[in-house]
Length: 338
Image (cartoon, rainbow, N blue to C red; front, side, top):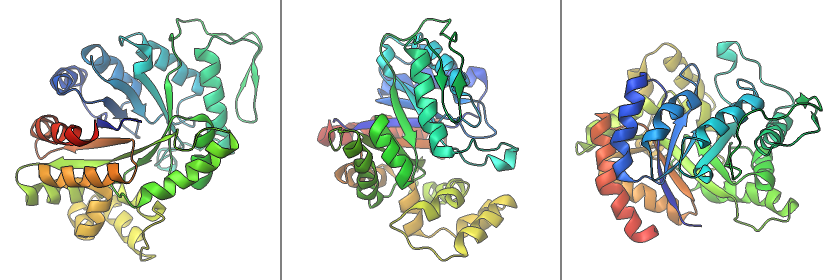
């Protein structure tokens, strides 16, 4: 499995900015372009439908759709439309996750949660393969006459499940192509996640290691290393309360996440940043100069990571950060890994 280098974006832009952004990043030949599907930003598919016609050499997908927020019928329909915009339908992937920040936005998670993810996969594949006969699950149902009314992709898109959990990783080992650990740049966690996935691979009689591990996190790269790391601390503070205590390789003070979350909810990101040590920053973000990112990436790839997602905001100035990634980081990594 050849490692992939990807770039991922928050969906907080205007329609024209999505188009110009795609045109700007296309020549750098990232292997994958992902967009987030976080609340309360634009839905990921909306952004990718604008970007995809201007991306010619990469896979595209959202990381990740949330069945509690978007019905799997709609995920399938959007995926089919996206696949119609790219040269090869196998260039599209579907990302699914349980989601974060749901209750803060008045959204209730579909229960049982793991069943909802498994059944979402069934329904998405039902619709994209043109099946008939209906579906009768515990969470989702389709009447017998329900069938796909739109053109479907020639090839079934790859499936990625976003999770840190043992049980959902095992499910992914049975039915998915990739597992994404969102908000982490920690190489120590990769072997643990691989072990979780292997349980499902064994249950489904799949070859061990056939499901790739994707690591993605905030990325801030600049020639001014100190400034880049300072900005990364502020950026990662939003995500750290969600993921910090999910990492099985890190022991945290029980009150740490509570303190960090309180500062974020007060919008005091300067105070939140002061709570993030150098060690924590390196485990949960890509930050510094090009050499820093190359070293972090080597460590992740050596640990068995299949794909690295360099996430928003990319730099002190986004275009500068993207250019450093595309012109310096990617070529250096590809010398060794591709």
